[in-house]
Amino acid sequence: MKRPKDTIIALLHGPDKRGLVARVSGWIFERGGKIIDADQHYDRVEEIFFQRIEWAPSDEVSDCREETEEFIKFAGELNMQVVCRISSAKQRVAIFVSRYDHCFHELFLGQNSGELPCEIACVISNHPDLMEATEGHGVAFYHIPVTPETRRKAEQRQLEILWEYGVELVVMARYMQILSETFLKEFGSPVINIHHSFLPAFAGGNPYRKAYQRGVKLIGATAHYATAILDDGPIIQQDVHRVSHRRTVKDLIVLGRMLERRVLLQAVRWHLEHRILVYGRKTVVFD
Image (cartoon, rainbow, N blue to C red):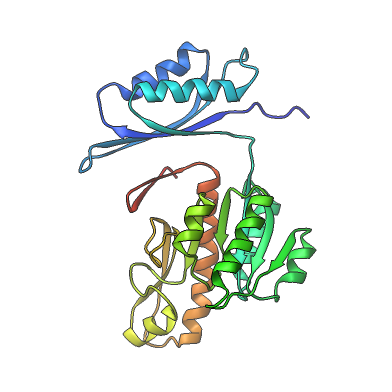
């Protein structure tokens, strides 16, 4: 069976000016490319233009990487920042997890079904509980205990593993530890976290109990990019479930875990499909 032809996906953003859409599509047309998908957004407050465009290069193009480099040069002439990815390039992902396994299993199901176009390269945990499940998937498992006294040493070991496996994305699948600013800077690639509340409400620990004590009528889950400030990174996806005074804390946890799985899977898929642009504390998601 013939492998589908590679496409190029570009995410652009920069100061708005007239004719940007025409110039980008014209560049692709003039080089014999075929646009597969295109979407754009204009932030009227910040006056920033955002675009996601995917195209199949001309049959005469033998190396998509060269075409990508030419497009990046062209985008620079438009004063646009751009990141490009070739469709067949699967990102290598590391899962950080503690003891809760619902999001962990959802990510492996997504990879195995093809819903997540990635390769889960390794799993890192501060507990040994999910070692057997990880190895059952044929993936390396690393147990790295973390205490306040050993945190820096543990993070250094985590970084060594990520670099060894060429990891491009870390997913915190209910990893109940805070990643330091130093770790995030040294890793230098995105980290997606799932938080079990509808941020910015109930950041930090025990959000379901806090929600119960506050008597909320909605509970939620939030997937966001991790930053040095706890639960404050750019939000990718959120969802909610309506609840009433009849629900116990245990009920909220059960309902919340269904939300967590769904929200995290969607956020990771959008990231892997190159659909998210981050600017400031916000995201533009071309869903």
